[in-house]
Image (cartoon, rainbow, N blue to C red; front, side, top):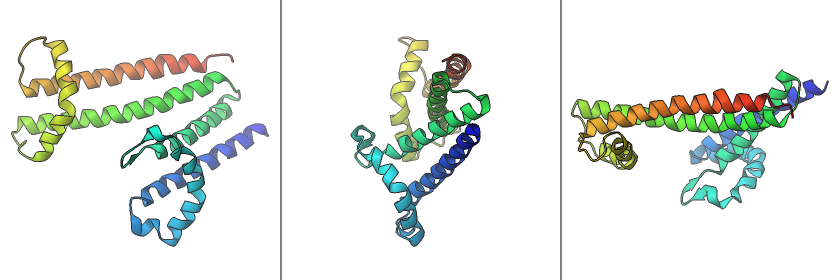
Length: 196
């Protein structure tokens, strides 16, 4: 009976998370945000989202990362409930493992985006199509980290920008693999096996 309640609660939280996501997307489209549907979603979602607006560190200028935290909290709660339902036990280890999984999801997404950006930038550089201003903006974004990584591999040597991009791409791919092995393969599994 208790497991069924937790399962239903997890489903409700997952559904509410989906509604929150739709609400957040609608805020980007003013004509939809102020529609009747948008106002109903605002009444349902804004009280919860406003709890996180008080965290000022997540709001910098026009960027507001509080919805990510709000959704992340619900995802963790839903995942913990699903973990309890599937293992039929409750432990601090399950909670810690789910937090690690959520952190990995964020890190994974960032690394994949960076890998794609660096890969596309490398391809564009190889075929000599990098005259657009967007590529110089991308270079400004990735160059500081890319050159640091390259200096670790080729200390005090001049290398072509394509080599810098290759080194960065390899470093990002290796980082992705190592972080996944350490976070998910070792730490999360360790937490899941904790008896308390």
